[in-house]
Image (cartoon, rainbow, N blue to C red; front, side):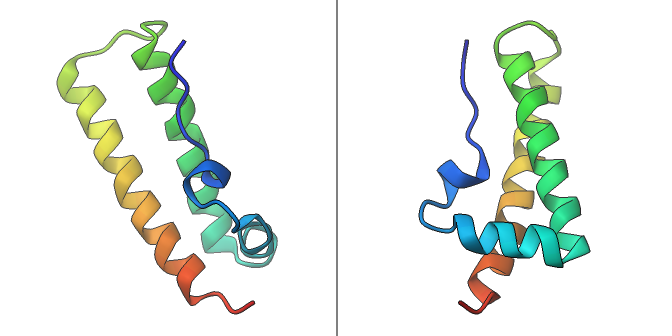
Length: 80
């Protein structure tokens, strides 16, 4: 089974910031949950548990990148 990254894998060393933002910022928490759900969906698609078209798979991955970029910007702006 193909493993998809999670935020801790994508942003090593940022677990404390991720936790702080997830518990203290509703917008970040929503992005976090959406990112996590997209990862699970992409994992099911890549492992062919949930077959779909290539176009749909690529769109899911594009959405994940967009979310990751927004999350990265919020993490960068978060003070230690």
